[in-house]
Structures are given as structure tokens and as C-alpha cells.
Image 1 (spheres, rainbow, N blue to C red):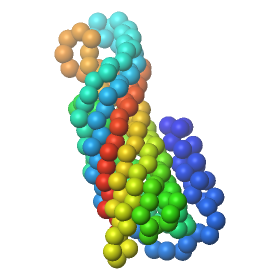
Image 2: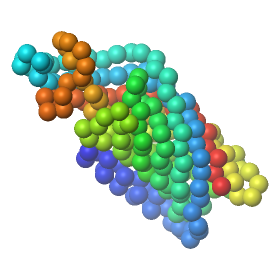
Image 3: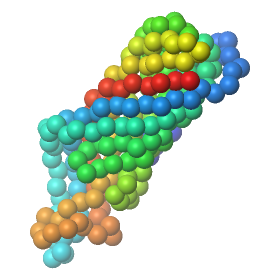
Amino acid sequence: MKPVPALISLLLALALSQPGAAAQGPEFGVEWAYSPTFFNHYLYNYLDDDGSRVNEEGWDLRYVVNANVGAHISWYLSDCWRLGVHTGYCGVYEGRRMVPTTLRATWLPRGRRSDGMLLMLDAGAGWAVEAVRRPAILSMLGGGYRLALLGGMSLDFMLGARLTIDSPMVRKATGTGYVPVEDIRNDQAMYIAVSAGISLNF
């Protein structure tokens, strides 16, 4: 989990480096994204039913349809920098769904109340719905376009690349079912996805 504190520290440093922080109330938002996963790399090491050690490593190019729904609460540290906490429900791979909690830094070069491009960096952890040995590491880098609306509301259109490092359940090489947790020595999987989404902020 060491990359998560490092990424969160980077997000905070980027946001706090912007001068002229504005003292404003929080902003809320709801978000939806279509995020198909197209690449999976895995490395498993475990004891099988007969006591033999099994080592599996490989990769898979496969189009797996996923979607994310979520909400956020954010604060503007300046007119151009926003820092927010995001959570919700997301799919990361086939049969793998999570409840994420991430910190997202968003840069709006033209300011929060103007139409214009945006850049974002997101990092945090995800807790699997099915089973979990340890939280997954979630990160996303992307950009998009903000459409300013009436009453201080805005609509963000976003496109990004998402990386997930997970510890999924491992299917047995012989027999059926999954390997018991106590027999697993390593169960790391990495998923890469493209995320296209929209966020309503108010």
C-alpha cells in the first residue's frame, strides 16, 4: 500500500502549491463513468489441494465492460484547484466489484466558474465486494472539459486511464472452487482500463 500515501501526498502538494487559496464552502457532486478494462496481468502463488506449490503468471487482453457510480465532496483551494474525496461503487474486472475511497486533485486553468479544459489525478483504495485480503490500490490520470451552468453548478466531461492493483480470489488449478486464504502466498493482479464519465457538481 506504499504507493497510495505517496500519490495522496503528491495530490496535496500539487493543490497546495497554488497561491491565493479561496476560503469557500464544500462542493458536492454525483458521477457516472463507463470504464471497460482491456488488460490484466496476474501473479499467483499458492498451495494446491495435494500440497504442491503452484505458481501462475500471465496476462490477458480482453474487453471487459465495467461502469462506476459515485459521489464526491470537494473543496476549492483556489479558483483553479479543487481537492475532493470520492466514493461509490465500481467494477474493475469480470466478477470484481469494489467500493472505492479516493482523493482527487483537479486543475481548472480557466477557473471554477468558466467553460474550459480540466486535468485530474486520482488515487486511493478500493474494498472488494466479493472477498478481500487487503484493499486494492486505485489510481487514475485524465482530463476533460468543464461546462459551467447557472447557479454555480457545473458539468464535467472526463476521459482518463485507470490502473488497479488488486488481490483477487484465486481459482484452484486442480478441482473446483477457490484457494483458501491461508494457502495463498501471492495473489497480485493489475488491471488497466479507460474511463469515460460525466460529473454534475453543485
